[in-house]
Image (tube, rainbow, N blue to C red):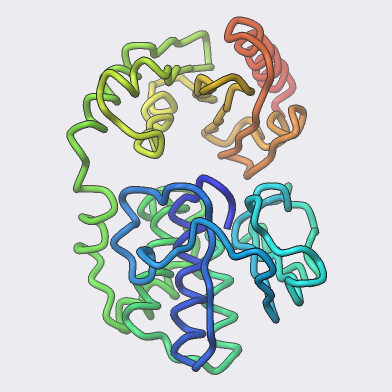
Length: 302
């Protein structure tokens, strides 16, 4: 899964791990970064390794929701130790870096692809596995609110409920148990909200995170508040770099603008309505670049 994992990357990886272990396979799940706070309850999350032993070798290596090989972390095994590299993704901008690339831009989440693989292997969908898949679908459909919600994901979700998933319990654990620090950080971030025509922006500064005693991963979803402003077509969030480095920019669109195309211009990618990239420079110059690209996209209807 990609660094700084979200619910889809983590949920799909844990679903595959759960199903494969139930089939008697040995599985290691790796990610060097902190897991999203609201998905740490999933079975197997506590066993995710932050590093891999030097020389560790595998028959198969699976990348979930990565988008690009360089997003997998420093300990990803080299070509002679990773076996077959399977790239599972649903981003339209993903790089085909795997030996096998199972990429479906129409899939609501990578968890959908994990479900199909598990079924193809003849595996049963246990409650633990079902919860991981369901969590990945919740994450990338915004609890079945986004345009990615389609008949396929709803049919699979129904099957997962039949396997033991409790929808209300999952919704509460993912969306209704907010740390107090997150709410305080949200208040700080929303105070930076600016609206320029059809573009809304927010800024996540290091000082805000420190002031509220929060964590970086607690900012997930903040950008949706900016997109929800009446009349806004595109929202952008700017995450201040720590210890130097590029600004991290996230985009959300109501559908008129393909924000993945904007992100690609800066080496990023994603989906039509949700994307991201990293940009070097000071805040003023980064904001100016984004504002110009969004303005052009709105004019062109792209």
